[in-house]
Image (tube, rainbow over all chains, first blue to last red; front, side, top):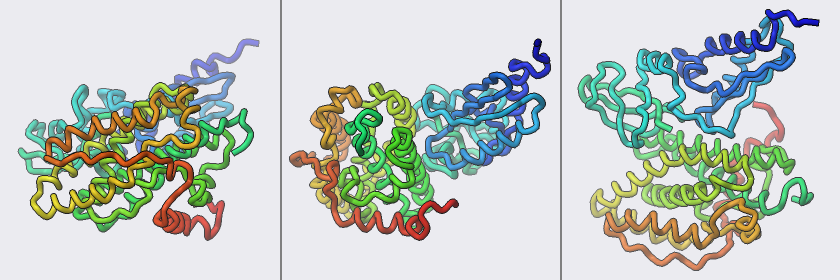
Length: 164
Length: 255
């Protein structure tokens, strides 16, 4: 018997990918986990889906929250028989995985994007005024993946994603 | 720790060294929460504590996958004799200079040890190490900055740092030890360097900092196995009591 193409594994994979685009990061509601580059692999076999995610930091306490959000977002997807969400530690997440769209949304939210190919000690431009005259305030911030910087132009502290 | 086939003793012992080191130093970091010298350090030490305990969880989970025991049991129910952490990380924080000096020495060691397991024959460990080492670099940068700042901060802070280095130096004897299965660990390729090689590399990393601030590098104490074979000090017993207090109220409770 031919399977209904609507519910083919390929179609379900695309549907899962689309659903993940709406799963927001619990700490940064402006961006999705896809835009943050946390989605490593999505596969579907015989209607069973598997979503493999890369934690930004090993000790990120938001992982269970993210797992539940993913489960909630795909529940009721037509044709999906089951779903498994796994966190993959075998490949490191890197700040280079954040998509251009993710970078734009982070900036709009007031979080500077990580600079690529720089040492840890370089401060990114200010997400508010765009000035490059910034400095590191604290390598550690409100979450494991963020640091705190200071803009000398608009005299405001701001957050930025750590370069990892 | 039986059943040689499913979890070889050497690997299990080494995973305990990694896990217990991170759990103890993470717990000590958490003790600064709310009482660090400034709010930036409250934030930094909470964040570092979270990282370290996350790394400990990763290692305990590997042990759980090897069917040793559930990770919470491994973290909270083992007494001091079965712990494999170095004595350096169980010691009390002391003052700020002592905290910074201890953490700086430990973070340098972490770079050395993690780089020696990046190509471990135990693949899950190699892959985890490549992720963890990226995070640890931030800890090292932070501690190195503070170490140099205290050294050049004036007579009082420099004096306190010198006193702290002197006090901590004696407890470096078991830091580099690979414990009971040292030979097997290297032969099996679980780690690529032995204790002496790690110690020498550690010294070569520390030397430029000491030169820069004009500190004299003391001789490293004679190596011993100490904490790596379960010989610990009273502060660890107290730490375990405090850390597992809530857990013991109702083991297995879900939070």
